[in-house]
Image 1 (cartoon, rainbow, N blue to C red):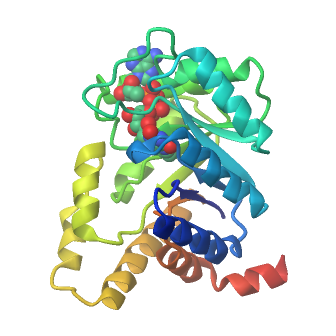
Image 2: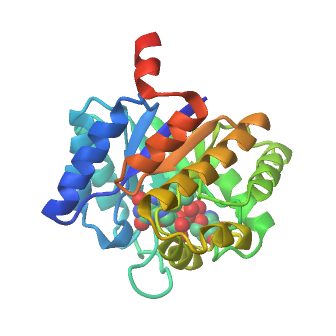
Image 3: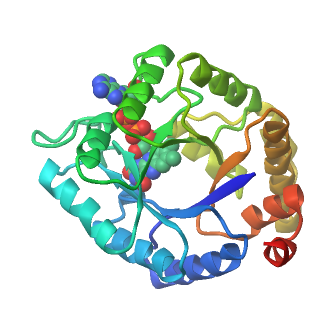
Length: 281
Ligand code: FAD
């Protein structure tokens, strides 16, 4: 089993200390890499550079996300080169979303992630990951087209695929099957987002085209104590990871939301305490 952690750049000093402590708590799990998002939630480029620097400084194998939004090709390339200058050898290449309204490609920019991957591959020899959507990207013309464009990203030079989180394991397994059928052989890292707050997760999921199954919502009904909510969240994510492992999917990318307890709880549940792992490494 392999796993990685995703963080986002903080925008306040309280956020900075949450990130710092999440990194400290989670790095003992020895992830295969840790990534820092870019531009998501309106964060700035400088915040992404600073957040990425924090991961590099902790000697984590660091991946920097990069998007095509609102920038011409030269600026996107300059940003990628700045990440590489920081010590990054892994880029997560994304289209991104417009901060307001529908996505419109920059006139001199990369229109879609496959164009970005091709542009990066002109000079970047490190790892490139791209995004995939088991429940289909919300703006995709169809599931089949979405898969064709995923294949285009791989054909342009992507090394691995990271999925949007998806709480329906059958949908994930069916998607993994479709990757095989489309002859997409790159490693498939399943996005896992433990549910810290069921209402917030439902709201966010509605915006990004992910669903939260009714059966999961019902399990949270009536729970009020943070410890009970955390335990259920860990149980749900660990159950999903176990089911995925049984079905041959053994690479997980945790959306940590800059919190450590739930991700650490899931890992402890599926493979035992971190301290044992470190001692046997
Ligand atoms: P694309 O692969 O370009 O696809 C976008 C849409 O266009 C899809 O509907 C697809 O079917 C269609 N399409 C793709 N290629 C073409 C083409 N050549 N011609 C016509 N249509 C095409 N957002 C951020 O802002 N910052 C982040 O750091 C970030 N990190 C993420 C990490 C992961 C693992 C995931 C799953 C998402 C992340 N996102 C991030 C969100 C992402 O930017 C959005 O989901 C965005 O809407 C799509 O990005 P993409 O790279 O998947 O786009």
